Length: 513
Image 1: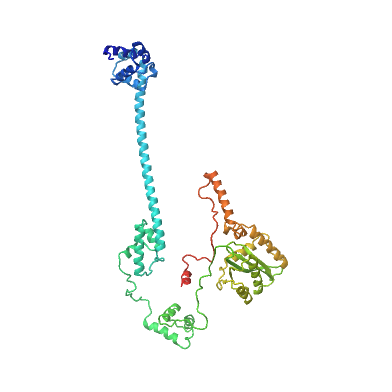
Image 2: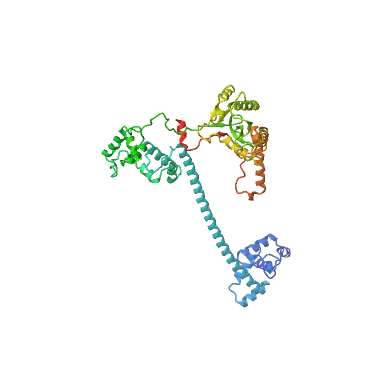
């Protein structure tokens, strides 16, 4: 049904302020459906008319209705505002308060916009910083990987001021540095890995060869003349000086009031004339070779043993403590105190240790010093019978048997060690027996993650250390703020080396040769 405009206006007035009658009540009174009234109210609102929710007083108007009221009264005078308010059941104070709220909302909107803009700016800055840090870490990771590869591929240290480097080594170094630089390493870091400087790298990369070997060098003004050099050789050829070294010749010439040259110059002239060689029956000096090296991946693979003095109550008289150690577990496999030191006592102790550990079919390596008790014929025959491969320290080298030396230090620094000497051989043996029991079964050794040597010897250290690791992980989970890094390392110790190879040890090349 189509309604006239007059009736439509008359019905809407009942919904206008100050009436504000509910739509359901007006629909029942006018006989018009509520849906039609809702449609008319929506159309009136779209046309800019003030139509608050039905039944709501002026304080319950929606924000939209209040905003419309502020807009409608913006250009009204005080009298017109009073008339407008009376027609709609409002107070001028409400209009003024609504206007202030609108203005404040606008300021809040601007403040919120500024705040959002600032937050967005800060977020973009954080994003840029994170991206920058990510790029830095990626570059550092790439550089580390490139340097590790360079370290594996690179030759020995090429650096050193004035050092001669062959053309082949130069070319290889330049290629390796270029490869590392392409993989993400900085030139300075790559050059430092090879022991050369940036200027050296640039000079090598430019090509050319080292002209120093072929350079014509001027003779120093202070150098000896050919006649003076020949005079030195003539003196050395004289019968009275023919068997003497330059040190003796220089001293005797000084007693005669003659000075030809310094001692070092004598040596240098003789060397240039191919007359400076080792003479006599004395063996020429030689560099000691690398120490014997042994690796133990488990118990009963490598033993070390040694003998130490035990003081007695009589000054100058000693007992002799023999002790055998398994370097993998640090366990004292056997020990004994004797009144004398000889190969027969050594043979007795080693046979007893092999029988006690039941390793006759797979005897361990046995390392010792070069003493008479370690290299006597009786002992060597016993080792050959037991099929034990002996190993000895280098002559006149005191640190090739470090495990035994450390054991003796632990032994002699026990609180109950009798510093004034043992009263008898039986007293010494009883004390050593108690020490061995304490060391093997109670002492937590720092070199094997603080388990006892007996526990490691029997393979129990893995379970013990795993339980300690679980305990520390639980403690960290209970109070994570107390842990700034990883928990204590309870990983079982792996293989043990006797005299491990030291990196950059010049004797390693001698061993390889």
